[in-house]
Image (cartoon, rainbow, N blue to C red):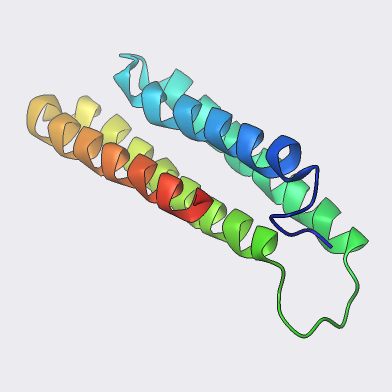
Length: 121
């Protein structure tokens, strides 16, 4: 049962989630958007691999979907939004509209990072 009271909840859910959330949120402070894109896309790939491995170990018929799955699905959604934001920033830098869009994208990234903390709780 992959729930909050399980002894490995902190090791399996909280530590990787907070580490990945911090990395992908702080990545927007880096001036090179290609590195940011690499960090966020690798985070997304790791999340998908983790969800697939968790789904293989879960029983197929459960009454209520485990909370850990909801958490990681929300994490994939947030990381996908961050990936889109990063791609928008790359195109904005090519068109030299950096200052306005970079400020808006950084604000969106901070909001997404705060959403992660809500899903962890």
